[in-house]
Image (cartoon, rainbow, N blue to C red; front, side, top):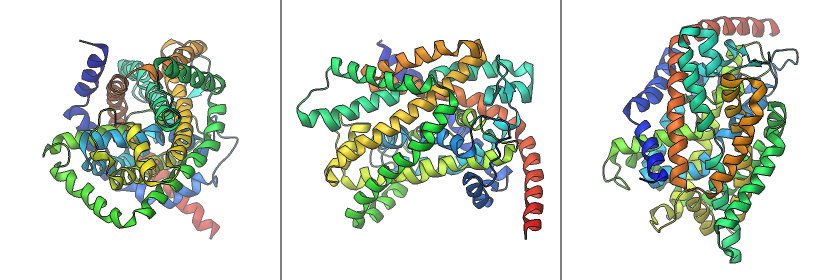
Length: 457
């Protein structure tokens, strides 16, 4: 059995019914338990994001906007471009519907997990304030739950490796730029791209979360802007096909006729699996970024965090899906047409210069994702081995950028999917147990905010 087969088998085994129930069922529980709180306070969340409540004297390293940007840099990334293509290849158009469902309930999950990340912040070995599921478990549940925190960190060190991003960016550069110039994507060229990417990543990640937050805060709006404008152009040019394919997404979600021959269960798994990689609700990565926010109001950060799945999956992933579907490329089962290659072909077939616009957006998406994931993996390593040794993880991380550029897509997805699944269990279990604490804090927060607004009027 090859390494690729082992890793693919690991990823598939981890994404069974128990995990699906944990993420989708757990999100639904949080949504109902909070009485749809995330959606009732959407306007307030936008005001927080605009900086209305930023206070420099609050504890933390970065502001609300930078925290969301850092989290979005990881989520609005390759998962939205390549991950959507993978979902459609694996599960057909209907997989997108289940990505929406996952994101909808994921907003409630994000609210709970990221509120807890600020509520139960702890000190690392250097005395710096940190947030994330491992600190929630240690500070909120106590030492007897420590094995759960260790499991999260071990899985987190490998689940956040940058290999998917570097793999798909290398494929994009090869397909989008080199092949049209007559240059074949050989092993040597892949390795060269990987080394160049590793150097760029090293220059940013060795500067820590403040530099990552600043860079992400500047690049995220740019990358989303380029990408959204390009996709809107494709949809406008093919506007008469949009209703037809929106309908297909809904119909195929419950019939699975397009790809899986009626296997609806498989289509739900395909959608939920890619949604988890896309918006990370319930996985535990975003709470690590939001746990670094400058705020003394945990509920406020939870409200900011819940906007991630809405921006990421419901808006950006839907646009990618429609761009792929209306071009008909998804029905092309030619060998090698998968992942990011599928999206590039869709852009190229429907937009003049589309492949170059997509490669530019992809480059920014991938680079910002690489920055954020290094922070997540580093926090997990620091928790286990001490923050003073985090440089060793960063060197390992930079090496994994290079490995991803030369490895096969199947092996990379298998490893990361499997580790993501393991991360979800400690994150969701701790959130279930501590959910009443979140609701109690929310009641106090909104009562205080309502009083404040009355005084202002």
